[in-house]
Length: 198
Image (cartoon, rainbow, N blue to C red; front, side, top):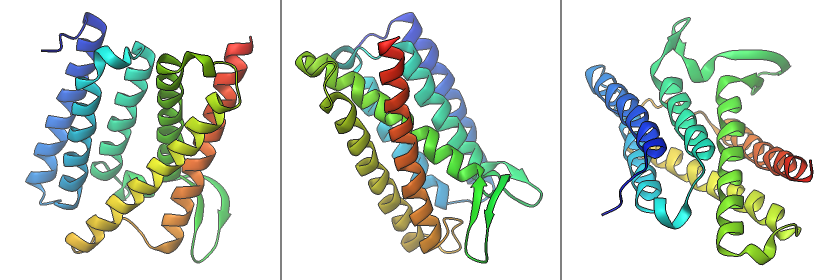
C-alpha cells in the first residue's frame, strides 16, 4: 500500500474535496457531460497516487496539477454572465465570427499542458538521468505533452458523441485548444530550462 507523505496528503485532500463538491454539483444540475471529465480526472488522480513512490513528484508539481483540476472543474461548473466560466473572455486579442482569443478555456489549456510538460520532464530526468541538460530533456516532454493534449481532445469528442448539447465547441475550438496546449508545453520547457540555468 502506498503511504503518502504529509505534503502529498494535503494536496490529495484538497483535490478530493473539490472533486466531490463539483461532482455533486454537476449531478444536481443534470450536467452529465462533465461526468465524463470527472471519470477522467479520477483516473488521472489514481494514476498519480499509485505512482507516488516511483515518481517522487515534488509538492510544487502536485499542487500545480491539483490547481489545473480545480480550474477545469470550475470552468465547466461556475456560471459567469449566463455562461460557463470556460467561455469567459479574458483579453481581446483576436475576435472573428469563428474564434476568439484570449479566453479562460485557452488559458486553462496552456497552463494544464505546460504543467504536464513539467511533470514529464521531471519523470524523464528521474528515470533517465543521463538526459539531463540535453535537448531531449526539453523536446520530449513538450512533444509528449502535446500528444496528451490530443488525447484530451479525443475525450472531448467522446463527450460530444455521448452527451447531447455539450459546451465543447467545434473545429475552431479544437484547433485552438491544440495550439494553446502546444504553446503552454513549449513555454513551460523554456521556463524550466531558464530556471535550471540560473
